[in-house]
Length: 338
Image (tube, rainbow, N blue to C red):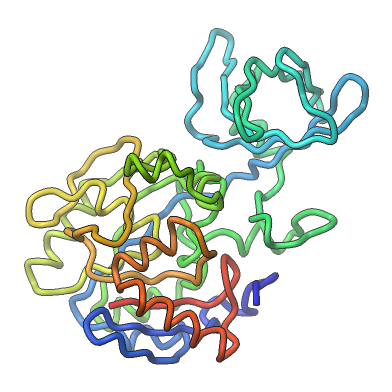
């Protein structure tokens, strides 16, 4: 049931609705959102932009090494001459040793150095130039591992694995609920009186990973960089004042809202590293609902949705989605919880 490609048109994806109060289910299309939302509601979009952060390098012996930049917009450190240190995920047939030098093909050829090896394939790698610039010209779209592309991502993926409102480069995964929204649909929602605002959370590789038990026990997650602009804070305050619902588009938007939530549930403008873990028992302060995709089991994403709607209700909704043939995960169908 894992979708290997998106719907032909963004708004053609199916949309399940789940009410937070009674647990009622409905079955619609994303294109029908203007009928399902109310005048005065506010959608909160994550305008992060996916970076072609998957790089293919060579060992001096000729062996191939795949690198995934884990936080492409935020180097661990910057050094003289434009050099940057980045956390990367390494994959190769033979382990890459600490101190190894890797060659990044292109004009000119670029040499990388593995400074430190960490757990689960992670490594600290030195880049001789800004990694974002190198990735822009030499990288590939970092599709999730469950989307199979034996020959690598195709040209369509670079366009469709990106929201139409992406603006700030730095993510290694798309805020996938937003993949369903077209410019035309956003305009139709505005005519309906449904406003939208933007914040930025650069989605990291940890969004695909099974959560580490130590992190869960401590109540924290892999940190992701977030920025809430003053305009977003004001838009949420105004929506709450008029009695509108604040609906996060994607788990990343919801996480950012709750991380920055201040008095009255209004997110405070500013930026920082978000390590908030939302699980059942969380008291929501900013968000009233969410537009999201169907998520993998044993991930913090489905835990977040269960925190908002209730574990048993979410499991019943997923059972209904399976029975009705919904498509799952990043390129799949959507769910609206309000």
